[in-house]
Length: 207
Length: 207
DNA sequence: GTCTATAGTTCGATAGAC
DNA sequence: GTCTATCGAACTATAGAC
Figure 1 (tube, chains in turn orange, purple, yellow, blue):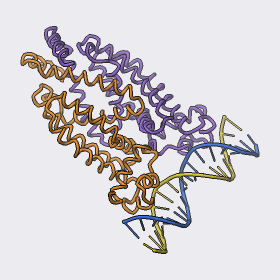
Figure 2 (cartoon, rainbow over the protein chains, first blue to last red; figure 1 turned 90 degrees about the vertical axis):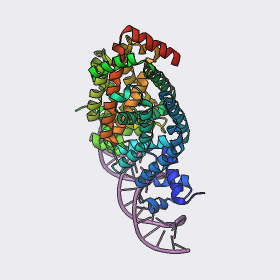
Figure 3 (tube, rainbow over the protein chains, first blue to last red; figure 1 turned 45 degrees about the vertical axis):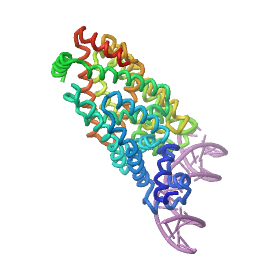
Figure 4 (cartoon, chains in turn blue, orange, brown, red; figure 1 turned 45 degrees about the horizontal axis):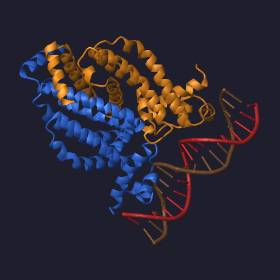
């Protein structure tokens, strides 16, 4: 059994997943952790600060588990497969769900916003590095900002996570569509130099 | 000045935007509407039911304003331009922000989930029809499920809206990257039949 | 249909015993 | 470091006057 501080951090994540940002309180978190309510304020000062710390703690914990798998990605298809596996595992575990809840809370609570950004950036960094490797040899890297694409990917990922919470079938359909869309990009990647030159010329004209 | 019922619906959206799902209550909404707190329960039975009604009300109101512009879209670039304009207008108005808040609340509140799905589906339908027109003449329509892609687009859109709330610069960067990515698809669209055949063959092999 | 008043609950946060 | 006890505030929901 971990120390009280750690138990509160993990209870905060569990409570966010179970009751949402509107349902967390010092009392509900402490009950989940099996400790007294006053300890939330002793260790973290306020509920907000506990939530902020919990999101950073959780993101770091989870990303450490995925780092090796991110590093092993070399193709777009592998990246997409990892994304879908990650989605399934994180949905069961709940860290991304908790992140999504504080992201919603951070819209109006200035104390929650920076913690959310920090937690999101941890994911974005991993996606960015994998995406950079994957796109390095494709015509895309020339015209698409990889950092921006990583941010869009992470934001979209959270949006899909929230969507799945209210419409699981729709979310599955969405993931399937994205998968076949990625197939098209892979196809473009594999094309010969003639086609790539043509694509490049077209891209220049459009950008 | 509208009737009390309508004022409560609009006050609920305003309060969701201003204070988030964790900050709405019969009292805060009634205060925004300038009416007594008890009227929330008289007209809607509970706060949850008011929120559910407000989201559907808001989505219908806003989509009616955009329907003509969605119908005018014929190319992917036009669709993306509309998406970015819509993003800016809705961010100022706040309906999508309110939808995102009940989406977060709907993860754990069974009374909120169906209303969120209904509200989201209104947007998805518009995107789906425009997307169907845009992709009809491209090789994409053969391999990508348009309905699924519309759902992914809407979910990603909400995710980006939430991301913008905590990191505006990052969100802008994400939108720019998506824009240049769409340029690549446009380029593929414009390619000659030879290239399209090659792409088609590749896609078959990968799917 | 709108208001006041109120019951009963839960909340954040602190003081103080151990 | 952890607990009990507690204050003051905000909350949902209802009863009842107008």
